[in-house]
Amino acid sequence: MMTKLQSANNNSAPVALPRFNKITDNPYPESEWPVVNGAVDVIILEGWCLGVQAQTDQALLKPVNNLEAKKDKYGVWRRYVNNQIKHHYAALYERLDMLVMLKAPSFDTVYQWRLEQESKLKQQSLILTTPLDRVMNESEIKLFTAYFQRITEHGLTTLPALCNWVFELDTNRNIVHSYSYQSIQLDHYPAISTGLDSTLLDHDNNSFTPALTTLAELKRVAIPVMPLSNTLVE
Image 1: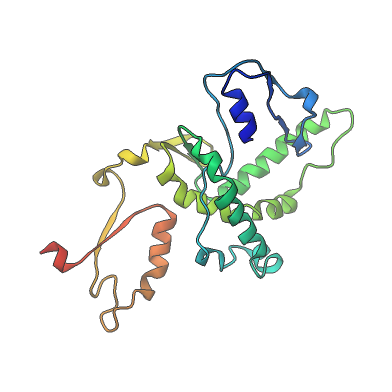
Image 2: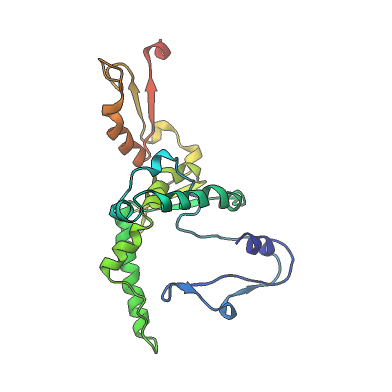
């Protein structure tokens, strides 16, 4: 991918751009790839998890679904994927001049969208000379999307802060809200400020453990929490 981007961005020889066939779930033959001659002005690179950063080691410990709990009991696959993001995608992300996110409402919606997509692919396959057997049924789609649940949910929570623009979608893919994260003012966007003693922290032992569930949910929906102390206020 890096080589393709570099070639398309200068005046080198013609560049064949990879083209993916969703029905066969494989790239088209190279003979069917579109060819670009000469340098281009704009390159749009689209990817479901484009720009998503690696998780912390702590975040990898708990499985996010039954697939991880049963098939990746010791977190080997999770750590492998995380290391690929951390060590092999950083250079690609650094070449992005602008990052725009079409933000799905939730991972459950992503699953429903994939069901819809597979239904359309099935209709396309019916008109082919040889019907394809790669179109998945509902249970296969549920298993397929489970592999992407971790990185998708991580992206929904953390990616908006890294984007130049975010377009929030409803379940019908209509844009319901858009914003430039860097220009958000707290008086126009949800935020929570909280005291520490006897509020965020337990009165008897100063533990914040009881608040962890609430804090995690606020993080999931990208609502910032600003802890305040009496010392700072005074």
